[in-house]
Length: 287
Image (tube, rainbow, N blue to C red; front, side):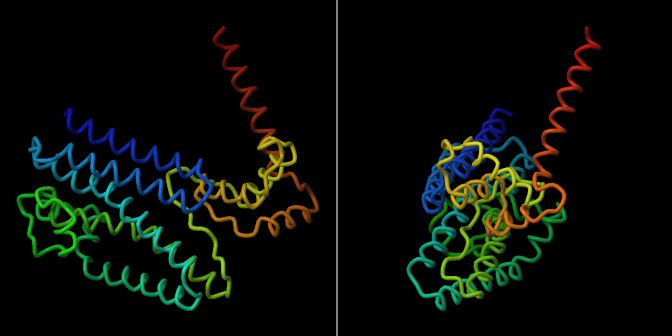
């Protein structure tokens, strides 16, 4: 139980630190590099923590190799790939960058095909093959790549944990590759910056977020008003897992509204007042 608690705590620390970097670091390259260092460091800490540890039962071992370890490996793989995207974008022509993105998308397709059974079991919560995929006793050196054997400790590998980690990373990379490819296809020499995903998402409309951003700038609530809308857009995209596109176009649409250009801000005001009234009503009932 103590080991399980330590593993869960380390996983929560991983998510928290990466989310913190995503919110606070503005430069995309710095954001990726710092996140990679965090993921790599905690992955090594995880390896030391588990080491030759004998799990209390098969259920605990499967839980670790199926859900906990892949989360750490996923981030190491993901941020390594994101760094390559930026390097390729900055160091090659649009044509070559296009080919690189298409090649990476093909790799994802091939990977999904080669691991179809494992992925199907994982996504549909089929547990019949868990002993084979996620226990060390059933580990088969021929079931995984030679590169993995060289870079990973064999006594901490199963037939499925690395593949699941890659699958989780590829789910995010697939969206990023397609977004980048769409921008390159349009002829843009500077595609939108990639967004590192975490569990905080903006669930209102893009126009609502733009409305809020311009209001914050106009009231000098951020940097005393000395902040560019593009800079703020990048920050909010990372903070809320969203891609806003052209903020000026969205702002122009807000200005053209016939009824209320401050629709979202008005709703915020009314909802907050209602929340305060509800609290007052609740407090009065208690007294």
